[in-house]
Length: 95
Image (cartoon, rainbow, N blue to C red; front, side, top):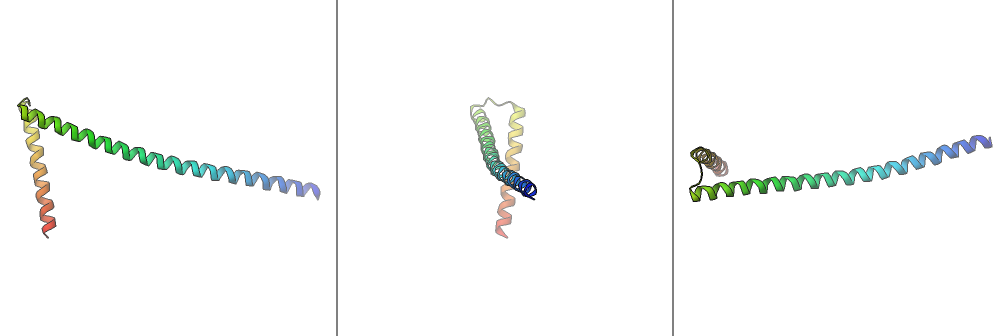
């Protein structure tokens, strides 16, 4: 009987240890998920900044007249798309 109680106690202790390890791993996992989310957000911000800088470079090229005709046509096409999108947004707001 004593042997059985000892075995049950060992099993219980090991179970408690496994549960503590599980809790620690869950905390680490949550911490890593939060860190990943922050890094993704930071990456998105940087991508947005890069896009803004690219647009500024294009604008400066247009101002200086250094833009090739193909790039100028692409820029005009993109500007037209932006204008259409703005018009569409205004129409939705007007409803």
